[in-house]
Length: 232
Length: 266
Image (cartoon, chains in turn green, brown):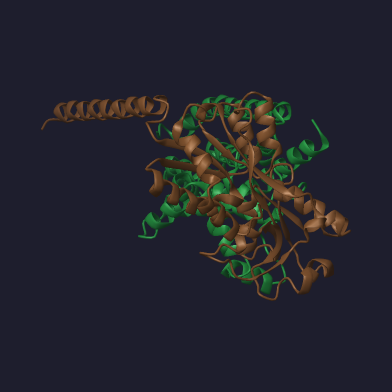
């Protein structure tokens, strides 16, 4: 691989790692709330989180470009805060990826929390465990397969992102030229050998990730059913 | 209805839906393979020429009754797509190299390539005070981002890099360059204000029907190799009368007038 392509690989890994970490921090409380609440907000919030699944990435890219631009509300806010503007920056890509990959992290977590049910938390409460204690020592270990799925899908989906980055990235080596964009450039420029190297690598990565996920979740899934007493 | 009936009804509905989809797919395939119905021409248009071509295509369709289907994008992308068998009859490129290469590779009709327009490069800002006298904004470096079309793919991008080199500014502005995938995306980066300055085609900012606003500096033509834009008849269109008619219409006085009014030389 050329230094440029290695650069793109490193950048992609960095983007996916940041995005996944941020999504886990934001996604855990959000998913917990979505799994517990009976309020009317649940529907609209769930729908909003799921939007990136049904929208073309170009819709997200277009709105972000306009919102984060100099006339957009987000752009004016970031400028007023002295952060500059987000399009064409790595930080901009992280923001976009967090939005775009959100359902892939939040939904598995919601499902896992729902499958866990209320029982384990109630039992822990009768044993005088505080709310934080219950969450970290009871709930989190119980939803480990869901957490794993969320982490892997969030990471992999960010690696596979293209349309949003194409629209707000500006193809800058070292800042926004991620693997999928570098690959697109190679194809357009007719550098098919370099395109093959990247594309083949990504197929291998994707297959490996999914294989790992299915393999691990198969085992852990059975463990979960055993622990949680036959919940689906 | 019992539960069983409901399930049976659902299955029947699903089968019917599949049949409809299958039929639609089959007819779509038949349409695609029947080498364009009489009078259809599929054109790949360089992004910078899309605006002018819209007008020309409308006039051509009104005058001849042929139907034009056009796609616009980066010339480099079309080159790869045509190599892989893309269904275009005519290519209106943003350079003269791509048509020449296609002819040399036996993918386009020999002797059909000719220059339909000579593009002009401008430095453009969406703000009326954004460019300054003789493009001094770029010399003073008063900007965060400079949008340039990917020079590997888009001839206007390559011309912009040449002009920057000739002005002795390339090293200074390099860290501020953001690349558009083609000249249309480059334009849109500047139009949304995300890049304060950008190198685009005169045709994009000075179209007679919809001038883009802001301000532009016409980059002196001695600073870059002339952007000769060639049209070429592709192999797929070799026996398509509509494709040939379009190419000869492109040379007509009416079409040439439109091309010139959009800011191209000839």
